[in-house]
Image (spheres, rainbow, N blue to C red):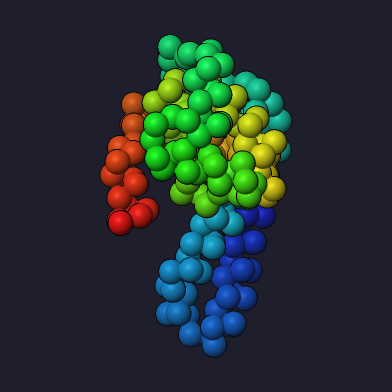
Length: 174
């Protein structure tokens, strides 16, 4: 459980420090911190799936029960075909279909858009990404979708909707 995760993190940190030349202050280097965070999220998702094996089927929080989900195949189809009218979302979905891969930031954006803008159930999107991603990891997908849609205590609040125009400028200033 948690001990294993912490042990793994400390072992990776010690190895990374040795690789950099033994300078502990070098640990603050951005890429290593980002790698450690991703490793932590991966292990956390594995832990949750192990401890709660029906995480991908059952609700974690009842706060999203009141969401007026739209069980609309046309909306879902416009999302996965990249025909939403939002250039960033459409380009990301085109990349997913053509390459089978998306950068993590784009995964968060397409997830948030489907759930919070279109109000399509998160399970639909999770199953689609599971089928399309060449690097799909079921536990990480479940954690990511639940985190973004407000299905975890430490996740984004459901009411937090990303400004897609601003996100587009952050990703591509031109």
